[in-house]
Length: 140
Image (cartoon, rainbow, N blue to C red; front, side, top):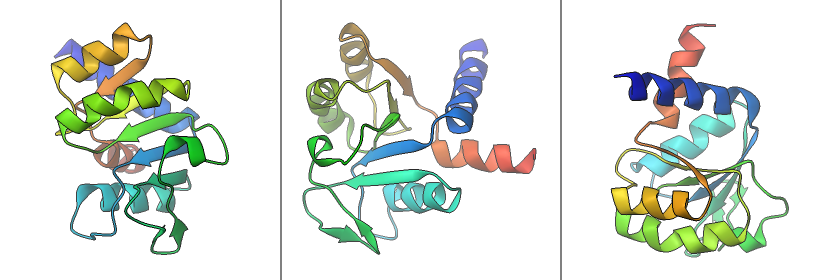
């Protein structure tokens, strides 16, 4: 339980202090979690860089094919992929020297977290940014 409280506290701290996010696994599919995540964060005032090589745009947002194409270094890299794909992306993410990688529920595995941490990255996992934002809004 303490670890869950710590994750919630850390997630809220990140959302209060960080303003620029890269979203690996962004999609045009309105029914997918990453679509909801992207637009919830944009609506809350964050700068979100969607990353998916399949798309040039998502709605009116320019979509990038990789982290290396971003016009600035994001504060946080959100990864919304299958755990296997997320684990494969850790090396590319590390090359961009992120401060933090955030893997929401369904996007992480123990191997992904161990790999990220062994490479010196802070990894926040198994906590939903959308749910955290909504909780924070309720307490304002």
